[in-house]
Length: 228
Image 1 (cartoon, rainbow, N blue to C red):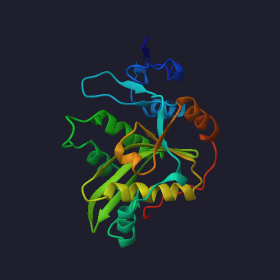
Image 2: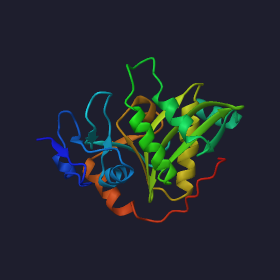
Image 3: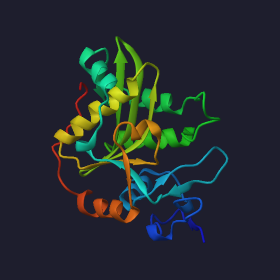
Image 4: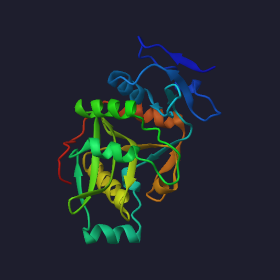
């Protein structure tokens, strides 16, 4: 049975309670307060819903992740990186990145990154939890992504691209930086061809929960510079 969250409680049900169909639906309701979102990621779930739906919280099994040392850089992506066609920055324009991620896509109707979702993650950014990666061609923002950093884990949320390989350049640059900062895992949530081409793979939800337990509160050398 689906659990409905109360606004006066930040407690989520055990991950084992998540539905098998649809895969990973754990709870509904609550709100998008910064405190609840932080608790959600620490617990192992994330919000994902469409306009007009209640807030839905998910913890799929298996979980798609990328281990930094398993990043796959294709020959074509390596060529683009060596050409230094793009400039990559961090936290220079979080609002522009999340708005671009929320923009309509040719292959999808609507967006799950509603105005309320944008405002919630902007607050997380202001609190120092959420970070953005910007990819620039000259002075034009042509790609990027955003997510949350906690302990030695990064929780990716969404990415966008307006130029060839722009989002891949941003992601690959971020992964190398996270590796240097001693991050051990990047949560990609759900599988996509785009992420799998970069080395993402699926692990059991129980194993993902172990990573949360062991690495959420571990120190890193992370210092989010504006220039990558």
